Amino acid sequence: MFEIAMTGTLLAVWLVAAGNEGIRAIILILRPGMNRIAGGEAVRLQSLFLEAPFTAMLQRLKLFEHFQLAFGAYHIKLVALKGASWSLERTKAEVGAGIGLGYAVLTGSAALGAFAEERLLLVMGIVVGAILAVRPFAEASRGIEERKQMIVMELPHMLSRLMLLVGAGETVQQAAARCLEGAERLQHPLYKEWSDASALMSNGQSFGAAMERFNRRCAVQEVSVFTTVVLLNYRRGGEQFVLALRELSYSLWEKRKAIARIRGEQASAKLVFPLVGILLVMMVLVGAPAVLMMG
Image (cartoon, rainbow, N blue to C red):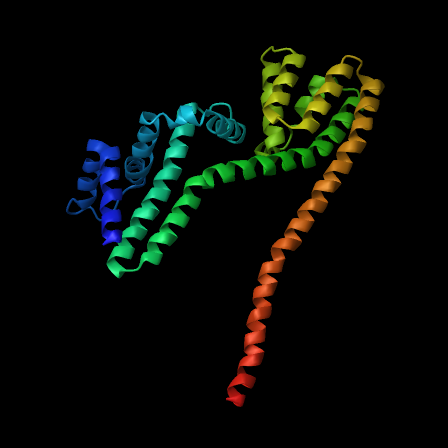
């Protein structure tokens, strides 16, 4: 009875949150002949069922204001990952979609628990639903850390090319543009931000302002040091500029090596669990015949 009451309560809360749009979405799904749903229609239904109701509920309950610090930190991470065009409303929609997905799993688990008369399914639904609700925040943090490591690992390579080009007689602005040669590099977060800075300089913005924006967009300590060194020495050009960057290059290569070691250790740790599983399977395969013979 508890599972049935829980399922009914969850569905009632969803109907209140979804409003008329949710009811129309249900009618659309149950409409005869609705066997296939186009891609755009599927996205719209997902928004109606999961994203819009819970985003509106969070706004009505003013939870975005109550948890402003956590929400603001999450928005800043998404802006760094998705680009400067990412808006606050889209961040709210991401939060609503994550909570909606967790709520859907909880509702489905409650319904299955009521049908099978098994309360454990409801407990599992609560756990999985909570994990799915907080997953976007964890993924954003993990994405920021991966982005930081990618930038720090690629920065020494870009610094070496910059030193080589400036040492060959090009100006710092020309060398900065030449560092972007190769379309595949533009997919890397460091070169993406560097490309935006180079475009700003081509449009007439000063070198210092473009580099400051590049520093803010990367939001990495090593890039901040690199930007400071470049701004202090780029007017000198030539040999003095190259010497200043060469001193910085040594420390950046050491940090790249440290990150490579950390990644290697993480990869080794991830291999432990499959190896333990294989070991257990082998023990069962070897030990089962002996146990059966003893029986």
